[in-house]
Length: 301
Image 1 (spheres, one colour):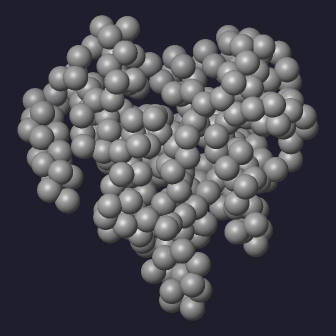
Image 2 (tube, helix red, strand yellow):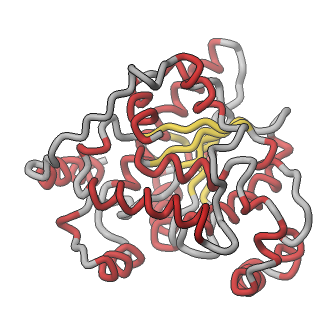
């Protein structure tokens, strides 16, 4: 799966028309420096800022804007005035920073502020992002003439876990996950209120479950990222842990059926011979220079 999504990075033909981009926040804020939440997690892992790529969030948002503009141009050719929404639900620090930018400049990376949706999350994790997205889609489902077509943007090493988290078979879309987790019920009640808690404790067949999901991993080569070995290993372990050993599981065992990207890729390509896994030695040297150049470019903007 990792090699599949890495290979598809450069193949635009597998992306079908979409309504909304889900830009998942990563490490770093919108200026390329670590967030407070990042620092706490890295301290527990025994890592420092020189061993990771702090441009994750910036790079994901840049890819989101690029793909949204391409889809908008395609819509215009069809005389369709619909514009792609970019949805972002980061940490409190990331959200406040993005809100300040779009309020003052009325755009971000050239994308109009009215088409950028910023949403708060009940906890700083992919789980928190899933809970927030599910609620948000129900609020704006009237904007879609059919079940929404969603394009998820993240780092390539993160994509397999993302699809298991947000797909139609995800435990996050089933009441049993919340009924058996009293700690999570408390967080939802305190952060979102009693009405939201009751919503998660009842059967669900809403917009996220019925959506058509596609994905885009921003890394053409997972091994080109600073600290890639730690990130890839950690995400592999997390995918197995959250789907098999955690009780109750928080992600699906397999990639769900409503993930169209995965289905198309298997039909069009033979995994037996075309996707050969080549993970060269880590190219740590030069990463810091690339990181600084990208940071300067964003600050200049």
